[in-house]
Image 1 (cartoon, rainbow, N blue to C red):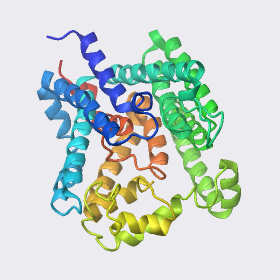
Image 2 (image 1 turned 90 degrees about the horizontal axis):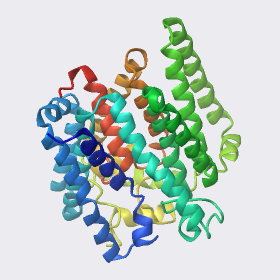
Image 3 (image 1 turned 30 degrees about the vertical axis):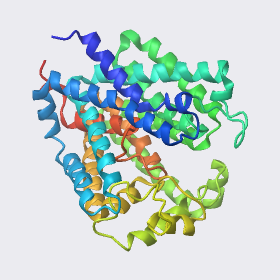
Image 4 (image 1 turned 90 degrees about the vertical axis):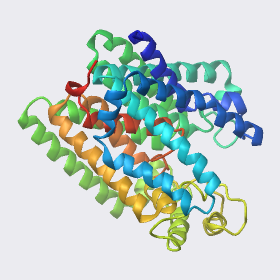
Length: 404
């Protein structure tokens, strides 16, 4: 029987590897072929850690997994897309990676109760927060941007939005850890303040909006859990706020983009979306294969046409929904949509029934926003996907069903 501290440490190690916070210091901003090979090999210990956690408790792992059938239908489609992929070797390699990444999230959900899971997540973010401050203050040539946005902090990531976005998630996580673990509340609230500082120093307005949304979502959960009347009032206030925000974006989009410091194309994202939609019409039902498009150097495939129509070369679709449609067609898009809807429904129910909503709901709200402009869903070797999967599975596999 492994001691709990050892299992806790393995879980934190797994998350730190998936965070990618070690990539910039290790291989620099532009990884060459050798650097890319190093990155692929470096994630193997994370896969091993995930399999190890499942092997320690296979019964709970299986019982947790079967509670999310849409997730495994989705991963099944990812793997099957190898057969119709325009780059079968790429899809095969990345399908294996995303399967291992997903199993890591399942292992965390099956192993830990809500309070423990919050502290596993928070411990990983605490390391990233401290390391980001160290690299920004002590090694500014790595931690501070000098070209595109001089003076903006980027910490352990390649650009400022990477740091800001990660710390917006981090605030949600460490705040939940403080609320779920009162004995260490002061520790976690301290890290929450430090996370806010990193969002501000990144100067990323998009991340600041994400942070504010996370604060609002956390406040919503706290108010909704006080009483049925408070829950009803909070729900109506939230719905009204969302409607007003959507109306503001539609009717005063120029003002909204000016506040964010963005142009109407969202820094070229709408051009990518339009170009991607054109290519989707070629294979609307099955797509081009999981992550088979990006990096295609043939000069004549869908990547070339998207780059031509968008006016630059993108690394992904910058939208999690379009990404699934491109790679796996309507079949994969439907699987992702059903998994997402199931997860958000369980999260909303948990707001009124389960303290785990303090951890899950704010994170999922911010994730939903970021997923509209970044391809973070069904993403291999991705920290945020591991967290999403862990929370999705945990919502369907409550503490009372976890056996020790």
